Image 1 (cartoon, rainbow, N blue to C red):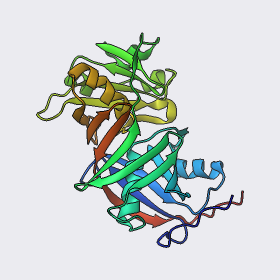
Image 2: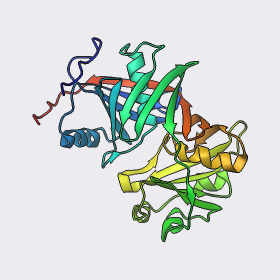
Image 3: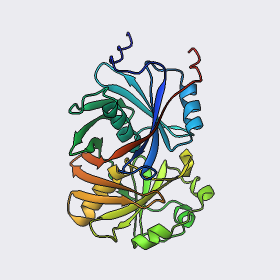
Image 4: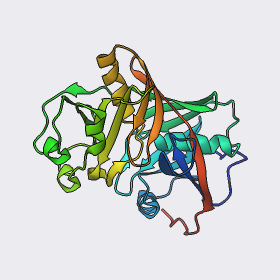
Length: 279
């Protein structure tokens, strides 16, 4: 099959952006790199670029028959679902005029079909719900976190650990070497919010995939939204990820889907000079 033709506004060369996601101000939220490609190069090259960027995620976009094909890489692995780099990708497509401001964006990903819209200056992303199932803590999990758990669960990606309070959550200093031995993409730690207007807080640790602590993790809220819906008996939440950078999300649970809402701001734009080797 022929490669779909890029939009007329698609930049020449290899352009990339650094975008802070889930924040309205630079240097907070979660930074992601977004790179626009006309066709897919070899996977080794994508991994090399992600290692060069050294951000929690680098997103690669290629035009598709309908919308765009989107892949996400940490400095160590390709992942199946990523919220903040999806938000950053949508922000780049709208801010550059590649997609009209009023247009919906559709991404084909390893995590399924994802769509984004701009609503009241925020980006709304439609993601699959990934609710946790109750489970016993595996050996080493709580010891690596250095905490006791009120509740433990897991979904296809991560373990979820609820602790007794937000101050306990903020004080955690995990043993990342030990935590990397836990068989999961990462560990979500959560607690009830302790600030006005914040329903719950969280942190995300992913040393197994090369991210000791992720600043703001959209995909973790595909788990957190359904979990807190069961605890609090409602479906709309204002959430805060209490990493050193911090980030804010609006989370709405809609059956087997979750709407993740947030802002993004571009902090850098450049051209990749190293050539793409032939496949």
